[in-house]
Figure 1 (cartoon, rainbow, N blue to C red):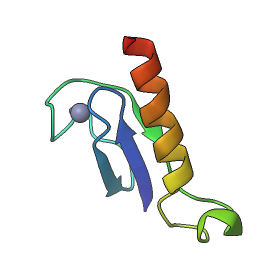
Figure 2: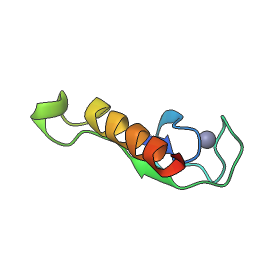
Figure 3: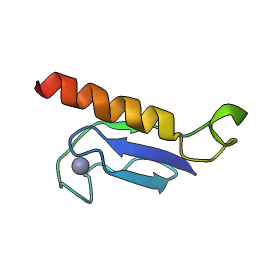
Length: 64
Ligand SMILES: [Zn+2]
């Protein structure tokens, strides 16, 4: 199982593959893989919180 983050609303979900439509904002958005693969973020298969925070920040910068 991987973690996916919606590029539109920052919604995070766990699934084998990302859905076509986001269940939160219902947009056909790009899902970023925010799964942790290294021990530094908690171990393989965990949600990479650092990546989530960085992506959320990058999205805010894009709007501003
Ligand atoms: Zn969304």
